[in-house]
Amino acid sequence: MTALPNFLRIDPETRRVSLDGRNPAFYGDPNRVYAALHQHCPTFYWEEQRQWFFTGYDHVNALLRDRRFGRQILHVASRDELALPEPEAHLVNFDRAERHSLLEIEPPEHTRLRTLVNRAFVSRHIERMRPEIADLAERLIDGFEKEGKVELLSAFADIIPVTMIARMIGIPDEMGPQLLKWSHVYVGMYMFKRSKEDEYAAERAAKEFADYVKTLIAERRQNPTEDLLTHMIHTEHKGQYLTDDELVSTTIVLLNAGHEATVHQIGNSVRVILESGVDPANLFCDEAATERTLEETLRICAPVHIFQRWALEDVEIDGVALERGDKVSLILAAANLDPKKFSDPLTFRPDRQEGANLSFGAGIHFCIGAPLARLELNIVLPMLFRRLPGLRMMETPRVKDVYHFHGLERLDLGW
Image (cartoon, rainbow, N blue to C red):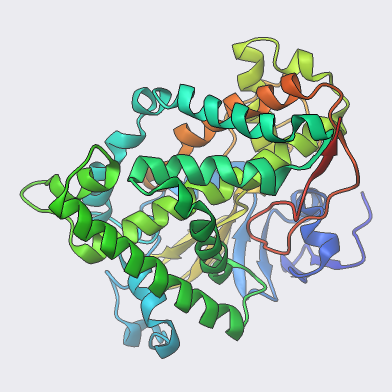
């Protein structure tokens, strides 16, 4: 049995785990910890987080689809019943922006919003963006190719996803840097490192973000165009139109989810490929090889690690008795490393054909932007290795302290 790292304590009998989520030895290499959890207790109570966590592929896959669990709880129970505290006064704008988020609501509201948005993200519509993505990526590489070196995240990975999702929605390219600033601060609310200062910063970002989206909504009502925001404003579902608050929440979540994970995944994927020592010419030799490579990088270094659920009723999962109102966490990235599902799971094997990874989730909350993210990765990764032969890492990259996202601080490359 493999020895545990000194920052991890596991009691297999009680299934209790002690682990500091802010420890760089953990978030810098979480796969090593996930392997230990699979070995000793894949379902466990994380003492510091005071919550049950599931890492087994079958459990995570099933729970993502289980309608006894949901992303919200107050549609079936009151705060008094569940002894939940009242909303924080200093987060009123953040809470308002989250109130109608596709990530946070359940049917029937979720069904109505997702139906209105989903048609823009179906694969046949997304595929039309291929020339535009390729042109942007080529021009960015043109800008640094002759330098012989680049910090890939700021010069490339940050720019492509936010530009493309903004164009889909109908936001000018020049807003990209500001959207990135708002998004980085906003998603700080989901991190283990969250402090009071992070909360105040997220509140300011939520207000500024929402105010900007409201100006866009007013403009599109006066001057409709061929973009997603206009479509959301003017399309009805069963006689109902989206309210302004729903439009703001939906636009913010599309912007955040539409680029945040993809930025991380571009960096993660390049790192994994370079560390693997596999010849990129073989990884991207044809469309099928490229697709297998992308899915393997998504499996072994997923950009989003945790998705949470409320128990909507009393239920028992894997011997754990949960009461209505309990919150549980599903570690998507760990499910991708379950040795019962994937052989030699910590090894990058782009030829493996052992089933789908769970990096984009499953069920009704399956990532709506998955087709766009996959297309962007499908275009930019082969292009980077084709345009920059001899690509190598100039130094070992550091992982951001943003668990439960997983991404790099920077990625310095030379060629």
